[in-house]
Image (tube, rainbow, N blue to C red; front, side, top):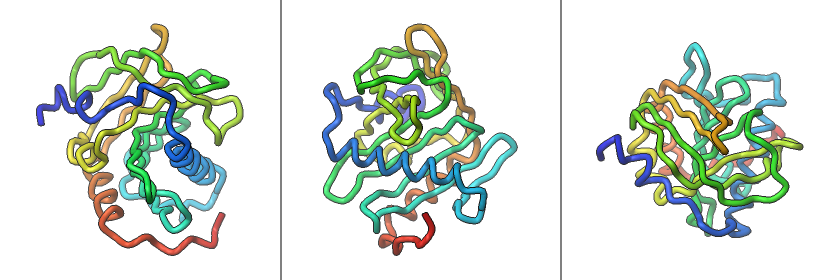
Length: 199
């Protein structure tokens, strides 16, 4: 697929509030994401790529009702691909970071999204919601039409900048996207792992 259009094709924003099961998928992802930060034991995080500015990790929480996900963490900013949970077709790409403004209720917002693979800024709609894992935080997410297509089109190196109301609220530059793709594809093909005894 032409990288110029790949981001717009795989991103399909829900034009109404997400269904309860979709919000539950995000809540479980955000809870796990925060637990990863709270833990000082790095052996609890399954890193699939580590570079000078951040790392990709893979999580398989399907045994506990969650999903497969891969997340790039660069300091406080995170970009994650979240696969559907059992009984749901809702998959997402989620941006979280301290510059995303808090919101009391989720709503569709017009924003500008720049990706280096596209090379230009594009006006898109995203869902701006409370970050249930961080009090007073916000997240931006896009519903994906197909998690496997999104992973097939992931760039190995990507710069992403998101702006709301003409103010930059999120920026991340990742490397190792192809290793993240391989880890997600392996997770999606494998049987769910047994629930971990760690929090």
